[in-house]
Length: 131
Image (cartoon, rainbow, N blue to C red; front, side):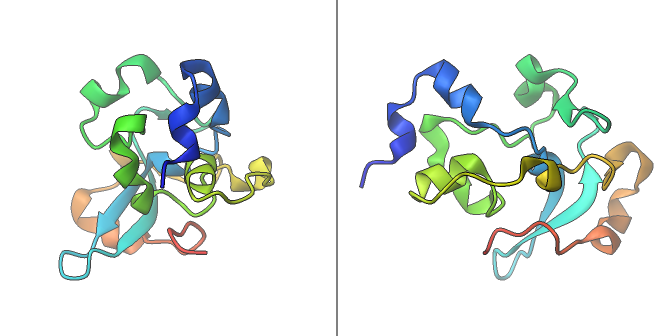
């Protein structure tokens, strides 16, 4: 079945994002099960006050782990939070959510402040890939 996202033009695509920045937190994947775990550690390029990328136009090149959704990689929806407007649209679910409560602002720290070996200590349950 064709995704509703495939019919969006570039400005509609960008407008769909609610700016919660949940996709900008570091995710860990269980190598055995493929399960995704979210952390309270954000990409170093995320402005922690505004929830916006400080170099949005170049995000994929400056951070190879950046989740950059497009019509060509809809398979990435599996790792997006269940609250993500792109994912909810793709799954033909309601998108109206309380964006302010979804924002990671004030709830995360920059990855520059956390050692990679300590990431497992920062797994959280307030972001999930499941409902």
